[in-house]
View 1 (cartoon, one colour):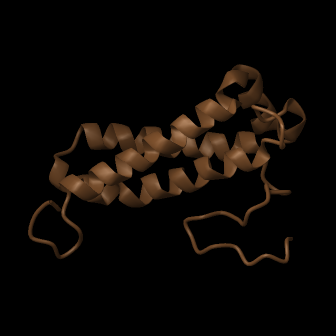
View 2 (view 1 turned 60 degrees about the horizontal axis):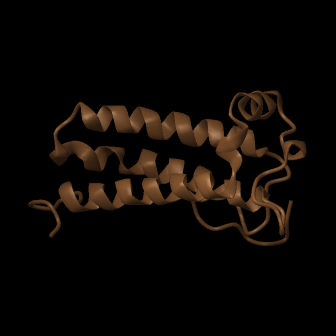
Length: 131
């Protein structure tokens, strides 16, 4: 474990890549959670989207772990970073999804979804959507 105190949840860790969870496992969680929440939001009124904000924040935290695995001077997470069975399988299925540009797009999209939730769905106890 790093000496650095990790940030509060939903973040997973500090500034260094995890030594316990590999990038494929973070990607699996991020994509599964965001896909499920996204489908649920598509099938619910905007006024209820706030209920999915926590899931999207969790997915964002997992997405934000991925760029930490890109070594300086490289543009993608190397195959050697995938050490778990789940991680290796995900990398073998979609190696291009671990390019820095794609990782940044996933992060930006998830941040935009969270911002949209904040814009269209009232916070708990609120009386209407935020302006």
